[in-house]
Every structure is written in structure tokens, then in C-alpha cells.
Image (cartoon, rainbow, N blue to C red; front, side, top):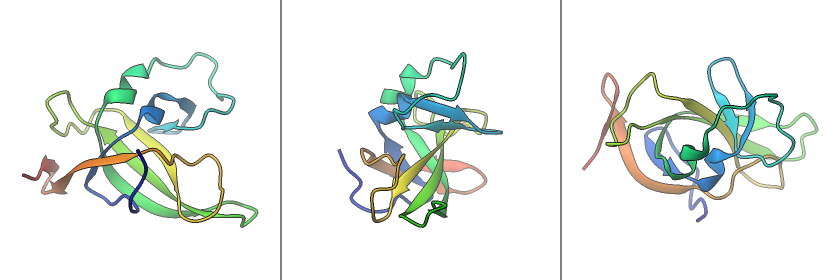
Length: 124
């Protein structure tokens, strides 16, 4: 399972690495890096390994040393029936653009597409 292209807003994605929690942000969870966790009592996110997420935001990211470029993606977990729920968990992770920037997730599968009306709905 690998990225075949840069994930875009509205892509429905999955990855077993979404169940690896690294840190918490203000409104989201940083996932995907197997380095030392920055959380003392991390929540159980093991179900994220099999969950679908919809990409809500993609922004260009460069590390401080300029060693590599990546994209910071934010994606929201879909409900079990595949519908969008704006109160579900929001994750953030890096997708590599060129060189070996850590901590990027390179094992992500795009499994569908959603479009944003007032909220995301799955396209047929």
C-alpha cells in the first residue's frame, strides 16, 4: 500500500499507520510516526488502523533544515457506515513530497472520493 499521488481534499484514505499516535495538537492527533510518543497517557486509537478518513486540508510543509518537502494532511475519521460526521476525530500526518523527511507516512491507500457540499458526501 503506497501513495500513488499526492492526496487531495475529498480523498477517502486508509492506513494501518493511522493507529500510531505521536502527539496531540490543539484540535487533532498527529499520527503515523513510530518514534517516541510525546503523550503520557495516550488514547486508544487502534481502531484507526482499519478506519476510513476523508482529507479535509492539504498544505505544503518544509522542515526547518530544508532537507525535504512534504504535505501536512488533516483528515477526519468517517463513521462506520462511511458517512461524514464533523465531530469525529481529526488526524494530521505528513505525506512525503521528495526526499527522506521524517515522520512521513508512505503507506496510505486512496479508496474513494467525497465532495464537499455543506459537509462531505461520498461520490458514487
